[in-house]
Image 1 (cartoon, helix red, strand yellow):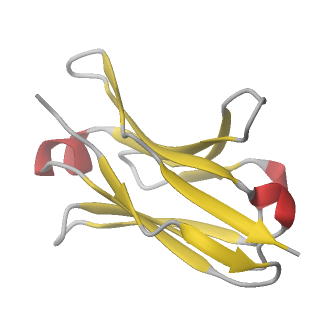
Image 2 (image 1 turned 180 degrees about the horizontal axis):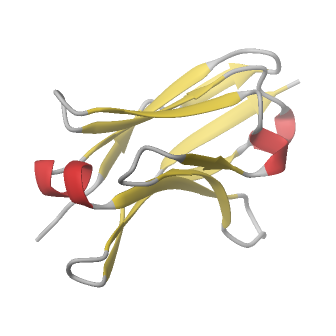
Amino acid sequence: QEELVESGGGSVQAGGSLKLSCAASEYIIRYCDMGWYRQAAGQERELVSLIRTDGTTTYTDPMKGRFTISQDKAKNTLNLQMSSLKTEDTAMYLCWAYCSGTLRNYWGQGTQVTVSS
C-alpha cells in the first residue's frame, strides 16, 4: 500500500516562507505524477502545483512566482517551497500522486499552513 506523508506545515506571518515535504516510495517518486493541492475551510480543494514524470511543472496562477515544486529523488520526497505567503494561502495542503501504471490516485493526510497578518 503506497503512502504519502506530509510535513513542514505550521504558522507564519504574511510575507514569510515555509517548505512542505511529502515522503513517498521510490516507485511513486520515479513513476508517478505528483503534486500539491490545498483546501481552505469551507472551500473546495484546489490544485497548487504539480510535477510530471518528465519533470515539467504546472502552477495555479496565484502561486506562480511564489511557490516552487521540486523532487529530491535521493530522499524520495516531494517538496513545495512557499515564499511571500499571504493570508489567503491558509489551508490544509495535501500531497497527491497519480500513477498511470496502476491508474490510481494517492493522497496524503495533509499538513496545515496558517498565515497571519
